[in-house]
Amino acid sequence: AQSVTQLDSQVPVFEEAPVELRCNYSSSVSVYLFWYVQYPNQGLQLLLKYLSGSTLVESINGFEAEFNKSQTSFHLRKPSVHISDTAEYFCAVSAGAAGNKLTFGGGTRVLVKP
Amino acid sequence: NAGVTQTPKFRILKIGQSMTLQCAQDMNHNYMYWYRQDPGMGLKLIYYSVGAGITDKGEVPNGYNVSRSTTEDFPLRLELAAPSQTSVYFCASSYSGGNSGNTIYFGEGSWLTVV
Image 1 (cartoon, chains in turn brown, blue):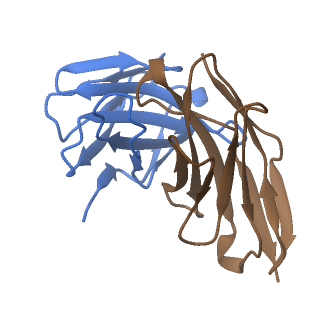
Image 2: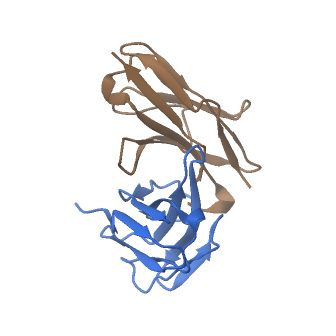
Image 3: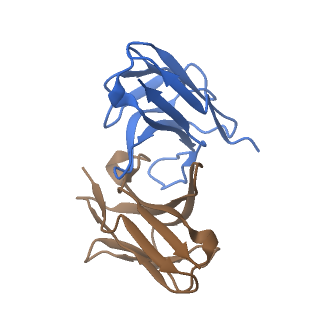
């Protein structure tokens, strides 16, 4: 079975400052890794995902995440946040044997302050 | 595009009552899922389905039932509601051609309170 740990439950950050959200996973098989974002009172939306190839993946709105197999991590970063990035962010893993089912971390709430 | 549609959005139930959360998707996805979201716990998989007529338990299936008579619909039934079932419920769907890491699309959630 796989598991996901998001090390920070809340991250306050000032507008235009960088942010890093930490995610570690455990799995005995190869995994696919995802970051989802949930804006207030909405469902989850895919932000980015790692399936294979380059270990650095980017989203269209400036986020990036790097897959580190040796450290079993998939941290999410953005060099300069906006007020509109205020949301909850979920790291998730899908392991080969589990098909397409996702195992989620507990979430990190990002609050961007002006 | 409708995507994944859930109803109702909000519901208050009394202990012991039953209800069905409806879910429909118009993307012709073969996989569908029900998750519940509790504060600080992320999302937990309740049930999933890999196609019409096929369902299976997830991490937290107790107190719930599902059916999948069509590709489009995947209702979740709560029998004998309990306060522990107070949560936000998300239906989701994906196309899966094997273990390809396809994107899962979520509905907007159903807020359920059991009192």
